[in-house]
Image (cartoon, rainbow, N blue to C red):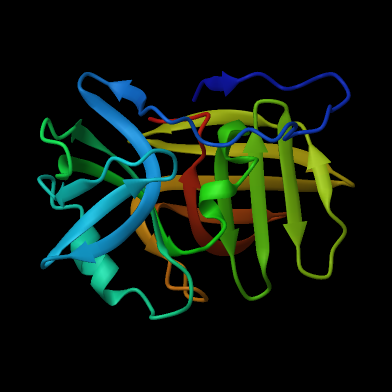
Length: 223
């Protein structure tokens, strides 16, 4: 396994600084494919995607069978809009007042949230992962990671990333004589507490003890 991220040797600066919101334009993640965040709303028997910024709307065409349509139907009926983070081929409408179309290729995240579109840290995140029983989450960025666990003090640490093949990789670090690892793999994962759907399965390993959860790529990583 080769190291894909170098160990950060200097004192950690604030991991997620600034208050940058989403761009109004799609982020290019490959030939003819863009990644956008926004809200899903039903209209005339179809799902329509409206980006966090801008007025253009896109009818969702799930050409890659990502399960988005079924996941949206199965999402718990809680308060708040249905937030989606997706990648696809966005085709704007040439006729004023009509919707464009997105040929969906990948679903990163689907959840009920009234704040996800305004998340100031999203653009600095490379990976986010969380689990339950007890609750934990990791926010990783270019300058380090933040580990939060129920009943434990928050830790801000440098880390090393290692690739394991087939899209799997790990983030590892050490603190207070503890070996801390986050292992992630590309697979559909449902958060048992909220019903949200994420595109990564995750395992938090601390001194060999394993807690499972889900994860997704932040705005700083699009592979």
